[in-house]
Image (tube, rainbow, N blue to C red):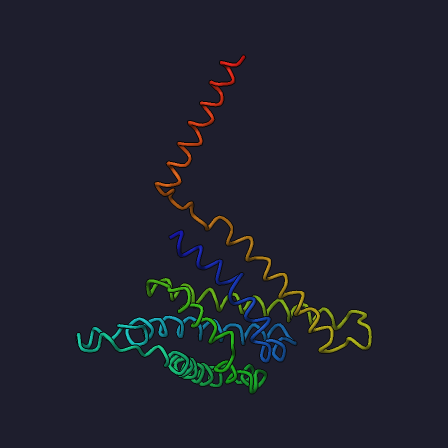
Length: 240
């Protein structure tokens, strides 16, 4: 349970919020003019990540990792299909995005029209692919943790785009200098948000390092130092 909670908060505040700001810039900036539109795209991203990250975990575990094909037979143990990771991950993401596009167009035509070309662009959004690549690099052990990581990563992206949309709506009524109006002030705010999200890393990663067990040489060295200190203390008493 603690492992799930730790992964949940780390993926929200460290991985996908920063990915949304720095890598998913196209849809992040284009669809964040209104809160309602940002909520719609954020919900779509949560759905896509919640499905694609666990599916890509299965692909990674049973197809892509070195020796993952042993379930087909011992003769396949030496095969390594890791070079297909990008192609397989993007294919899974593109399939799920098409499904989301069909559902949104069917049940919410107004949202589909407001999102426009940026809904299918989820398939090539670096933040979406980054979720699967981070899952792979973190070597997540179970399917449940992969599902947790996908949902929490989507929530992180959702919070990031919702925050910038709310700020941009407020800025419309603010006295912004003429040279900075539009994308100028938006880029400045985006950079400040990215710095703020990066600061969460120090809050959530502190204390992760475990104390390494002392080696026999280190223990012997400590014993010798202790004996030396005792001898010096005894010699000092003798001299006195």
